[in-house]
Image (cartoon, rainbow, N blue to C red; front, side, top):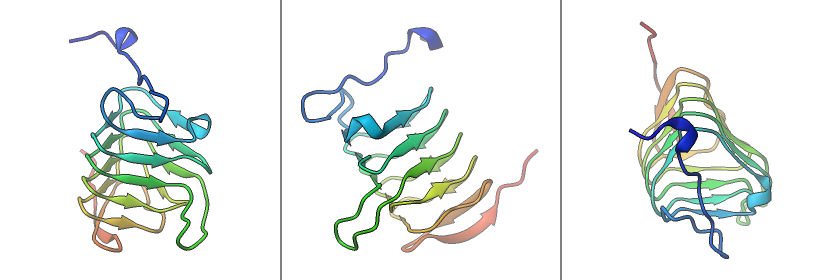
Length: 133
């Protein structure tokens, strides 16, 4: 196991692609916490700001959008500590996903998700609270 202090962060090429094959547009507005996992082929548009806090997991081919050219909406996206975003999920501008929450695969998140909840669907809907031990 690699010590936390020796873990390598992303290295971006001229197009914003990392060595793990996820892409960040507008990196100057992107904040990445520690101990995160972002799946290959994920696209992050940080033009209006994206903050991914510590211990967040994102499945492959997800899309995190802080600006949508389709409907003209913009807003900072925040993925709170220890949340999970499933494969092929789209997170729309201005959304916050709460601490310890999980979003199922193939979901469309167009509104805030409170902490400690499971949501999924298109659009994502509440499924259940996560019970703490």
